Image (cartoon, rainbow, N blue to C red; front, side, top):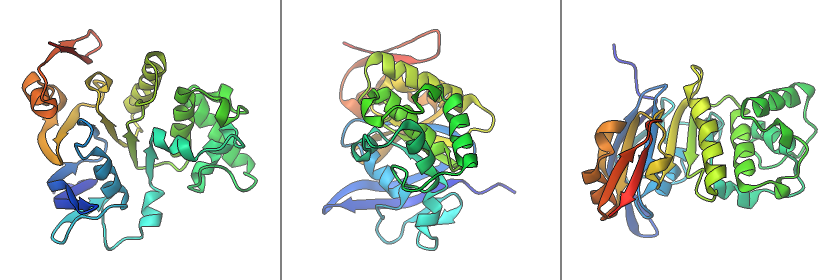
Amino acid sequence: MKKPFIIDIKNATVFLGGKKILKDFNWQIERGDHWFVLGANGAGKTTLVKMLMGFAWPIFGAEVNVLYQRYGTVNLAELRKRIAWVSPFMQRWTSNKWTGIQMVVSGIDGTLGLFRDPTDEEVEKALSIMERIDCRKLENQDMDSMSSGEQVKILLCRALMHDPELIILDEACVHLDMKSREFLLETIEELAKKPDCPTTIFITQRIDDILPVFDKGMILKEGRIIAKGQRDSILTEDNLFRAYNMHVKLQQSSSGRFWPVIE
């Protein structure tokens, strides 16, 4: 008997601000999969994340199942504790009053910053995760004094504090310079390669951000899926022309990453 999908979206159309953003959306993910979602600005990536988190709802007739739970029948506040959502836009809500270790520990409570005294066990777990993500040195550093890349790594550690079953990396590299971006991508790759890594969704608008470890993918344009399937079969020049309305040549590096060349 085939196991149910960890994410199963059927016939989802989402309106926001009176505008149709996602259109007849169908998507299934199996436990342990690592997917990328690629699309230009306005493709519907942000709305997709909102739908996965239960902040945006499709019109009647759709079905949204996340972590085997059907939306409309589940306590979303409790379900969200099982999802690690990492976005650079969360940095807007951080404060320089929090240190790295305080921000990481706050992931247990689902807050952006610590509003209580942590237990020794919580601190020990946080330090272990920071060691794993190679940012233990940021333990006592104020968030405000960290680089953008360091802040994102702290937010990733924070997300891992509650042992998530699903990780959503939402444009995690968007504000980073080249060195910081490569450093973060290396961290994400190491995490994704671990046998105990949760199901992961990597959302980006940059082709060269898509690591080989994300072996399944989906390309969006104007709220519709124009391609989905195995990474190497959908990252084609024809699909990229459809997505971006640009002629793009792809070059593949020895690491397996694709690099776009604009003609």
